[in-house]
Length: 109
Image 1 (spheres, rainbow, N blue to C red):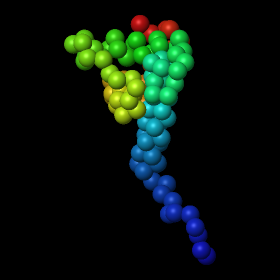
Image 2: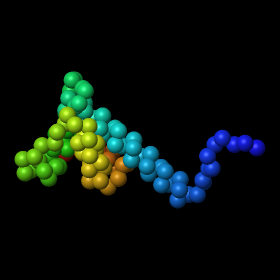
Image 3: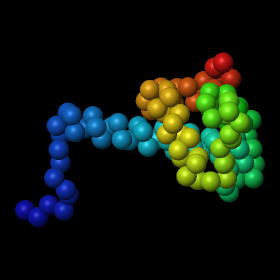
Image 4: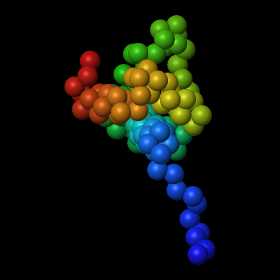
């Protein structure tokens, strides 16, 4: 039998690792989109209130901002790195998405 599918691995550790990658990717893309919406990012001319609230939140928790350094919100690499840093700051993708949701809904401090 000629099977065109790659070998499937149902080992729980492998599946859990793949889910972590998936959650990380979803969280990163959601955060990047929100940053772009809040900063008028690289190709976005319209700034949303929720996005702006999140960008202000990011700046308020940023160590570099306290020393007068603002990120370049027109650079995709910088925006992606900010998203990754936020995920690490929150301790993981699920918590980062929850925090993003709370901030954009104005429930977080």
